[in-house]
Image (tube, each protein chain N blue to C red):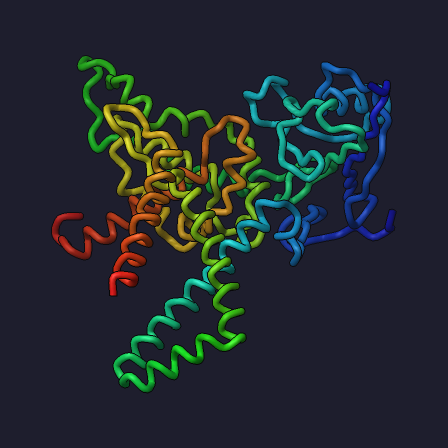
Length: 247
Length: 138
C-alpha cells in the first residue's frame, strides 16, 4: 500500500471566486482512515481554511455526507483504502446550494421534512394515568426500518428527480412520513396522504431506485415511496367505488 | 480564481450547480432507469400493432392476409425483433423492482423479495405458455 493518497477537494470561497474549483492535497494513506479523517488532517495540518461539516464520526449524526468519487457517502464510513489509487474526489452533496467548500444549505430539506408531519399524531390523546401506548414486536417491525433514517440527505444527492424538480418532496421525507403512517400509535395517515398526493409528492418519483442504494442505514426510501403509491392508488379507487366510505 | 463573485437572487453568494443534460450517463443505474422508461415506447408499439391487427381482422380475410404479409417484410421483422428485446428488458427490470412496491406479510414475516419477483416471472411464463398453447391448438 502506498504511504500517501491525493484528495481532490472542491473549494468554493464566494468572496473570492464565482465557481467552485478543485484543490488537491496529499494525505497519509492509513488503513484505518476514512475520508473524514483525511479532511480533518487537511484542516489541522495543511489548510485551516477548508470548511466541512461533521460531528459524531460513527454514522449516527448524518452531518458528514459528501460526494466521494461522484457517489453520495457518509465520509466517516468511506475508507480511503476502498478508493484506490486516488486521487479521491470529494465534493459537496449534489443538488443542494453550496455555501462554502463542502458545506451545503439544508433549509430546503428541513422545510420538506416538517411538511410531512413526522411525529405521532393522535385524534385524541389518552389521559396520562392510562399509561403508555403499547406496541407489539410485530407492530414495531412494521415501521422500524423507516425509523432508522438519520436525515443525512444522501438520498437527495442521489435522486436525479430532486435535481431536475427541486419542488419534489424527496425520498427521506416520504420514507419518514411512511414511518409514522405505519406506526400503530399514529392516526394521521389520511392527513399525510393529502400532503403527499399533491404534485410535488409521491407521484414525482419515477423509481430510479438510487436513493435506496446509497442509504447508509438501509431505510429503503424507494420502497417506501412505491408502497405509498399503492396505498394512495387503493385509496383513490376506494373513494371512486365507495365515495361515502372514505370520509 | 475570478475577481467577480457569483450572486443568485435569493441567496447571494451561494452556488447552485445546474444538472447536466447528460446526468443519465453519469452512472449505470441512471442509464438503466432511463432505458427502462424509454422501452415503454415498445410496449405502446405492440399495443398499437395488436389494435391494427384487430382492425384488419374485422375488415375481412383479405385485409388480414395483407396485414400478415406486411409483418413478414424486413422492415417489420427488424422493428418487431427490436421492440421484443426492449419489451423483454422492460419486463425484467420491472419484475425485479416489484418486491420493493409489493410488501406481503405472512404470519408476521415479510415474504422474501425473490418470492415476490419469482411469482411475477411464474405468472408471465404461465400466461405466455397458455397463449402459445391456444395458438398451437388451432
